[in-house]
Image 1 (cartoon, rainbow, N blue to C red):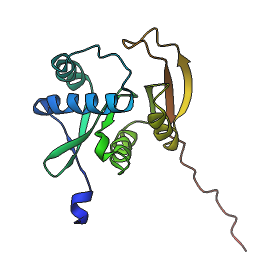
Image 2 (image 1 turned 30 degrees about the vertical axis):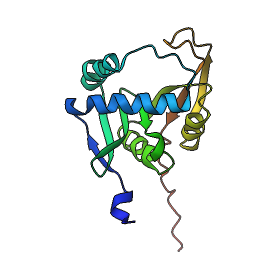
Image 3 (image 1 turned 60 degrees about the vertical axis):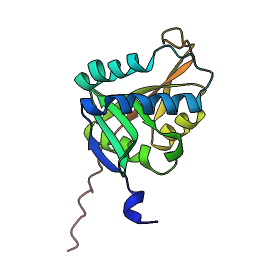
Image 4 (image 1 turned 90 degrees about the horizontal axis):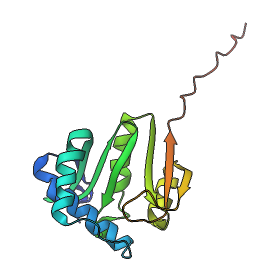
Length: 165
C-alpha cells in the first residue's frame, strides 16, 4: 500500500464537518462502551458540535483520502472530545491529533469513562495521570469517570561547563 495513504492529513474543521465529527464520536464511543445509554439523538449531537464546540474550541480532523476518520476538540487547557473511528484505531491517528493539542497548550485536563480501558491506557502512554475519579453522578450517562491531567515539563537548560584552563 502507498505510504502516502497511511499518513492522515490533519486539518482544521469547519461547520460543514460537524455532522461527520459527531458521527465519529458516536461510532467510536459506542463501539468501545456499548452499555452506555444513548442520551442524545444524532441531530442533537451534531448541534452540540456546531453550536458549542465549533464556537468555543479548536477542532481538528484527521482524514485518510476523502474520509474523516478522527477528530479532536480542545481549548482553554481542556480536551473536550478525541475520537478515532474503530477501524482506524491503533494507527497513530489519535496520537497525531493529541500531539497537535499538546503543541498549543502547556497543561491539559480531560475526562474519560473509568471503564474505557483503551482510552485510559492511551492517555497514560501520552503522559497523562489520573487526578480524580467520580461515581458518574455529574455526567449525563451516569457512568463513573476519571479526570486526567498532563503538564508540559519545563525544558532543561544545560549547566554552564567550567572552562578548562
